[in-house]
Amino acid sequence: MATALFRTFPCGPGDCIFLLITDDNGNKFHLMVDCGSYNKQIKEFIENTLHKRIDLLIATHIDNDHIAGLSTMLKSTPDLQIGNIIYNCYQQPKESEKTINDSMQTLINEYMQELPSVIEESEYKVSARKAILLAKSIYDNNDWKNVWYTNYITVDSKDFELKSVDGFTFGKLVFLSPTKEALDKLDQKYQKAFLRYFYKRKENNYINEANIFELLTLLQQLEDYDIADSQPTSNSDITNEYLNRIAKIEKEDESEENIASIAFIWEYNDARILFLGDAAPKVVIETIKEKYTGRLPLKLLVTKMSHHGSMYSTSLQLFETIKTRHYIFTGGNQKERPSEATIAKILTSGLDGNEQLHYLHFNHKNPITERYVNAPIKIKTALNFEADYNQIDAFKI
Image (cartoon, rainbow, N blue to C red; front, top):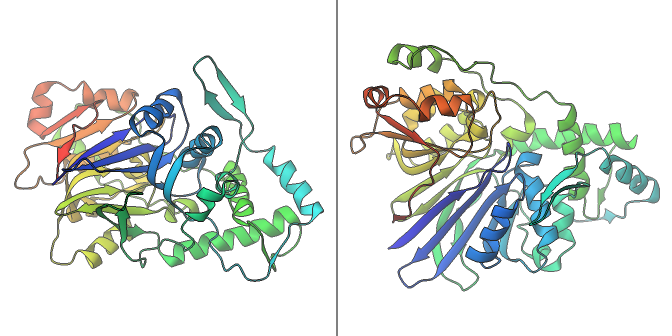
């Protein structure tokens, strides 16, 4: 038996998630997933609750609202103890690596100035500083560099056994995304960006090339249009008819970075928690069906919704494939996320035979979340849901 504590922290539009597992002997495992913005609340949690120890750090994909805070955390906490790091960022063969020449380095320095400033919140003030690459933060610390998992994580990766720095086992991770094809598409985008930004084709591997890969990916994101969840907050009553109508809105996000997002299930005995990052539902569904044949719909304690509840990162079929007690919505923005279409997909999906309610948990307020948290009791009762801004209580597994 063990106890699991799932925690999210508001950090602007991004994610910051922790899973703390304690076995019956008091042994602990600390998992951290993403951090879009590092603030005082997160800092105090890492120092006072985790005691500056993270057994496994996962950055699901290259996107500022998932990794900018990790860079700040590593910069400000050089004595942070990390057991393993998973971050898909140009894990390529190291043969024949070349040194970056002066002209390339000059361009890199110039391009770094184009990245948005990172907001830092200290005990006394809020300030802005120049962006720091997560890859560089890892490379600059030999202890962290040595525990950075050197192979790409894909759906074909072996299950990842969770072992604390003390050697105790706390279940495993089952990877659901990305596919190798998704990473190949991201690499093709990088090859084109390399030609554009350095005025030459990429013909060599470079020392610590993950720095360049991350930089060019972030630069392109400044130009790429992030598809908006155009479904506005409605003045219509929340009814079965209304939810069934908007639940049918489906269009999958096709951005290379989000399709390449890591998604996984943490599994301990019969308990499972689904971490979706910003992953696309089609791949997740296919992988669950392949890896959990005969156990569908798959029962989950918690699902961290993909892409902050975007309507383009979920589907009705997903909720036919899984059955979840608690749905977690992190980050998002003031107008569009979570999408009502995503909430509708959840509320119109059937409940597991042992469950009586869908539990929706938001870690930020906007007109959409307020609409469901403050819905009249008769509506919540009729549609079998509860919604709040609370953290989930620790649960026995």
